[in-house]
Image 1 (cartoon, rainbow, N blue to C red):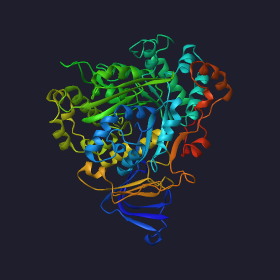
Image 2 (cartoon, helix red, strand yellow):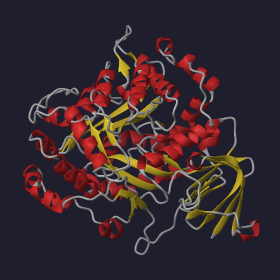
Image 3 (cartoon, one colour):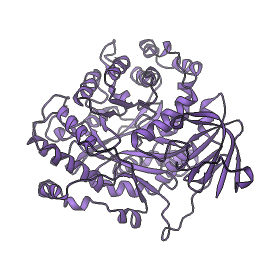
Image 4 (cartoon, rainbow, N blue to C red):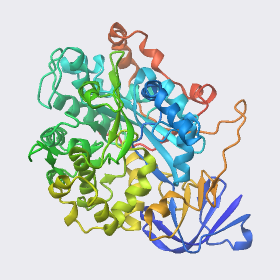
Amino acid sequence: MKTLIQGGRLIDPAGDVDQIADLWLHDDAIINGDALAAEDADRVIDARGCVVMAGGIDIHTHIGGGKLAIARLLMQDRIDDDARATARSAAESDYLPSAAVAAQRYLEMGYTVALEPAVIPCNARAAHAEMADMPDLATGGFCLLGNDDLLLTLLSRDAPQAEINDYVAWMVRATQSIAVKAVNPGGISAFKFGQRELDVDTPHPQYGVTPAQIIRRLARAVHEIGLVHPLHIHTSNLGVPGNIRSTIATMEAADGLPIHLTHAQFHCYGDESQYGMSSAAEQLVAAMAKHPNVTIDVGQIMFGQTMTISADEPHQFDNRHHASPRKSAIVDIECEAGCGVVPFRYRRRQFVHSLQWAIGLELFLMIDDPKRVFLTTDHPNGAPFTAYPHLLRLLGDRSFRETALAEIHADAAAASSLGGLSRQYTLPEIATMTRSAPASIMGLARHGRLTAGASADVTVYETDDDLEKMFRSPRHVFAQGRHVIDRGTYTPKQTRPETQVGHETLTADVEFDPQSVQRFRSEYNASSTFDLNRLWISDDEMHSVLRSRPVKQSMRERAR
């Protein structure tokens, strides 16, 4: 079927396009329509007075895996109470929605790709199975490494880089992942040996390696095996005043190799002021200027009830005292990582929460290049992803931001430089930050752009001075060519499970030496409850069992 999206303002930073023009779709792809006329279209969408962008891409959102099951079990009573109070189902929870509801909410905002950043290898099947219940929303996962016994063992004996590379590549391929993430490198493992904190240059109590060494070797492995996305790092000392020092030390530990710092707002604190905490946004921005190899996503907090879920078990253990409501779950997971689940309410009139809110906005506004800073709330940790439209209005409307600043804790507002920042995000900058730049940093060659050959992931927004209203409810959304949102109405995908697969998993097609992998298989098995080979998820299993089609993404030319 040929679809003509007619007369809209096409904003496509990837193609350097910002103009009134037509856009043609043919089935699941964007095509060149120069030789076509309106009568050639099977369907015409009137986009006059509208902005047309590629589908949005969220590079860091917790939407699949065992941690969500733990969180739902912990909060079942509250979720049920909220459901009764709002006459909705429990699956429609604001901060812990079911997979299908999460997919619908993403599509209703114009997003067509969402990436789960914490896929623990032993739980990868469950994560992919949950995400497969998200029709029309393409998904992918980041393999969680950096605290597993085998990697730490290899590093402790200074194994050759080629061996580290083979291990990382095998894990990425086995778990059908697209990238690698390290959470509090070495710190989760150290916690299991009784050490509460592990700073960047502190040796592990058992293996003797430091987080800096883990970061350096993993970043090199990710680069040399050809993954497009840099090592995705949740740094040491999450949420601790003064942690800007650890964050900058992490940047230096990479030795110039590409790295991505995730939910940077939580790692951007000084330890000044009468409250013992201050903004270090200016320091982080200055450090990024010195380290062009570093990108970040923000992890913006928003006020209200949410749920914090993290593999950073030691810091969630510390945070349990701040739980609201007062309950938590701290879980060890094999010898790979951990999990901490702590419900949390961010309060507008509380100094620390207000300052966190301001720090996130400072980072967005101080970093000039929208290709180096990405829109995230670390869903659901900082806020549900449905807060994105409100956040975009804060970034794009200075007067609205100043009104919001006046409503937070007065001392936090005074301590922040937010009031002095006049910048307002433009629509092309928003398109860069939420479309073209995420596609580029993830290696998604067919996403995030409106040029011929791209996936027919297209969003049509009605132009409005109120950016929150504009980005909350697009007029039309196409996902892989299917018209999923038509004038604000969502049409669920109808599939017959026995004959159709309605979901795509974006994966990396990495290579490794099978003989090298077999050499350390016995070491893995010595500390695991099952055989290393059980981790392997084949393409056929993805398709026939998990009901998702693995789509291999482009790779960088491998380093020699």
